[in-house]
Image 1 (cartoon, rainbow, N blue to C red):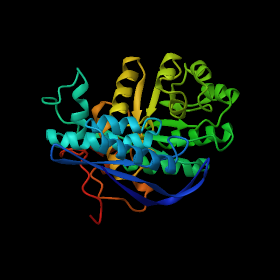
Image 2: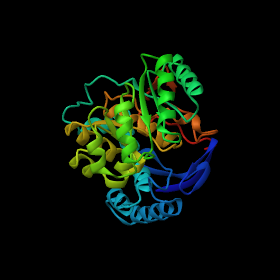
Image 3: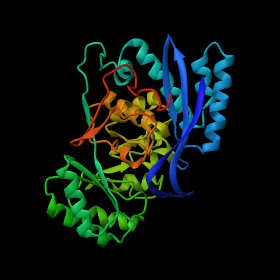
Image 4: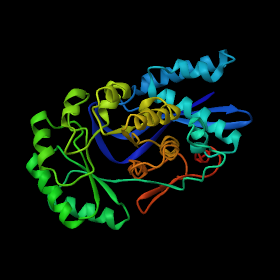
Length: 350
């Protein structure tokens, strides 16, 4: 097992609870299985995953366990428990190598465990629908940005809300709905509302697909009480409380699944199947990752297809990347690589 650190710059800095972030730092993990090489990515994001230092320590443990055990994959994964970004990298590296050895794209290899999916005979999933995301702006600018996204082919647009008063956000939504009456709109409060504001929003929001994370995480009982007139999607609450708790409390209509926060591509596919079996729709997104993890998330979404629009159009947040992108976004969809494995070529410079 080989571990290589990397850093890729962001186009624009973004603020987190731990300060301003100007780059995404992480590690590439390379393994070999059955004569094939697989590459995984760990790009930790505190709040969603472990810290960078904890990720590095977990990967060092995984490398030692990998070298010392005949059951190298099992030992390496076990060494990463409690460090989801690190476990994601090891999981992806092995899944990539396995799919390459089978001669299958990663999503079809991941689909092999689904009794409803015969990866040897099912047709290919060529694209996965994706949403555009529009950040905070005044009503006119918000409507213009959504209009531009729709003109670019996006049928679904997510608006960030909660930075302004509810009245100001409602004005933004009204202006947007006037400009693009047929677009599918979502709103994401990132936990910014209190219960009273969320209750008022539930009655006042125009027609939208869902409101994402209206209350601070986890707030499962409170989110369950909000369901009704407007569908509720949970994101941060899945990371804070776990999918099982979200499903048991019937707190969501939609769950947002991040493979790198769940601890692996196989865990994300399994979580999506469990959610769907419980009558909850999964949506797959990323944590502003580099190309290996981002492309793997596309494969996870393809393994669960058909899905609503997913949050996978995030590559343009990076000013540079580790390799050419095999999953470009165009016309409101992201292309699913059809070659062997994850489909990402070797890192630049190797």
